[in-house]
Image (cartoon, rainbow, N blue to C red; front, side, top):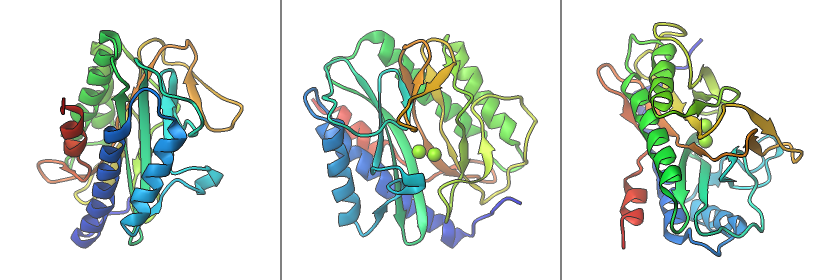
Length: 258
Ligand code: MG
Ligand code: MG
């Protein structure tokens, strides 16, 4: 059974996801060569608690921190550490919050200092593949329509799609049904209904699609050591158009500042 949200619940989810959006924009303000991922995590946790919410990931299956910070060939679930960000790195930050009983969950891949064109193109295509997926999040479509749109866009750029990790429903739980894979066939999978809230989150690799799990039990890296990017929106399925509950507006404003 899919958990269809009322308009009131969607507004609560919007508030949670807007707080995540603003937390990620705080990260955009301070990401630079020389800062550690643990310092980013500290700032994010303080910002979330200052807004009367709690970190959504901390303690979830015993994850130790507020953010997942995944640098370069780390795909997702990187644990904040004393690693010092270097000029030319890319860092995927995934952030969750719990506000008034509802979860927010979004991710963005940031450049650190001067990033080469190859990595910039990977980030651009990953973000665009997310946008293509969002266009399919309308009532009457199926999950496979989203999956196919994401895969098609990513592969058109010569990239590969991670298959081991997928998007998901979102609500009072961080992970609800259905799963939203980033690869698949049009017209397949569960039918989308208005009011279903889902996270669409392509994880796209510059090289091959294979990944490996690190011994810390969390960090997932590309098998070939090439970079990976990750962007995630929470969206409510709409009758004619998806209602995107996350916004990258605040991040873009920060990144475009000179
Ligand atoms: Mg996430
Ligand atoms: Mg997610």
